[in-house]
Length: 553
Image (cartoon, rainbow, N blue to C red; front, side):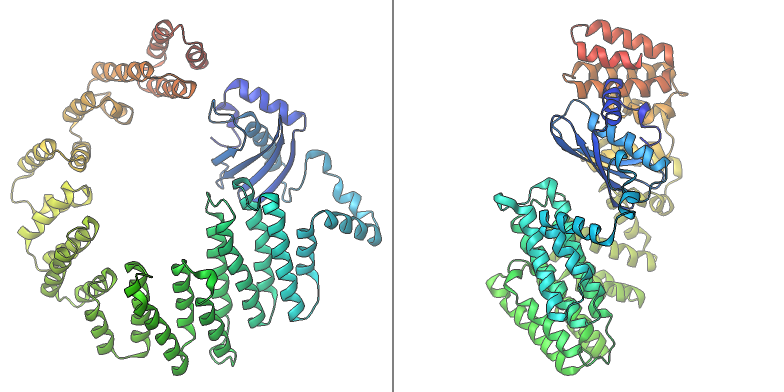
């Protein structure tokens, strides 16, 4: 559904109601959240928020309203927002602030004196302390300590604004909270003093992590704020020159933050900070401090403070330091000492493949398969390395057996390899493989059977499959219609009848109607109408179903 033709896809009743809301001025506010994301406030029996995300071509990727309506995919508040958004896009509105009646606001403000504008701003900020502090952070010209204090006050006022009496930020308010918090990040980017910028960034970082405790992060907005702040810290650190005398002090700030109590239980973020530290250790003294820190954290693993994944991540940091500042022999020794960790075994296997040391690849991969026998994903990873080594060594029989195993486990990309590796003629190979897949019990083999007969355009077998599994008729009807039009029509109608029989609410009825629309493309309008009439007669005691069927007849 596109913002320029949405009226074609929406229930007529909902469309009319939404248009009425739009015409009556119930869309009281519109704001641009990002390049293609818009937030609308719509007045109804309550005040509701509508969020719309679009692609560059106007396709509506996502839309939601926080009203309780659940009788269809789109409510009247969303429709009102669509009308408003369509108008804004057609008029090429760049800066969206309020409703249509406020279009002269800019001109009104332009005619006021400086004193009058100042009074207006002060009046507004008296009602919104967070806005007052945001303006101070953005425009005040204080010293470093004042800038830091302004940022701290802004953070505190934003928290008070959004947590309110409940002390908790609800789902619908979380995005606004994050948006206002990002003002602090902008301040960190603007200041020229690197240490001050880092202090401001860490103020935001600590509060963003703390917000996990008092905000509903169902959409991941808080997590995104933490990630963005980490990127900001990295940006600040990477912006300094290698010869900057503050490098040691900045390193100390970063390393000190790793021990911040706020990070207890957030080990991934500790490791992210350690990774940033790795960029500041050309000096051997700093490097030793960092290595000592990582090794002391690894020593704590006996208390199960860190997961195997986190231990592996810290070991990878040590490996990167060894590769950058040590010898090649030291790096290789470190890898061999930690082959029990997936990343190290994978690193070594890739290295051996590049060196054409395929026999060692096979042995190392087999060791991995034996060690990780309880993890199917890792077993598949190690077998893939073995497969590549077999291919390099032209061991066709071993390669064929593994390719077939991969296919039966659900990876169809190996089918072409199998065709090249088989010793049978192509017809016999296809017939035997098809029968094996058809007889196999796993869902992966069933999926590969379908892909195989589709790939080879085996329409007779495909029709038999669809007759046994009617839910696939929508996907394959266009392909099968020329092969056997009558049977395809019979299967399609049976599929729709079954869907109608199991439907019991409006959403389900709408899905049946969508199947009927798809059926029309295959069978034509007369047959569609004939089936609709049959369903209307059969379900004449279901007014909601009759209403939906009437819309497409």
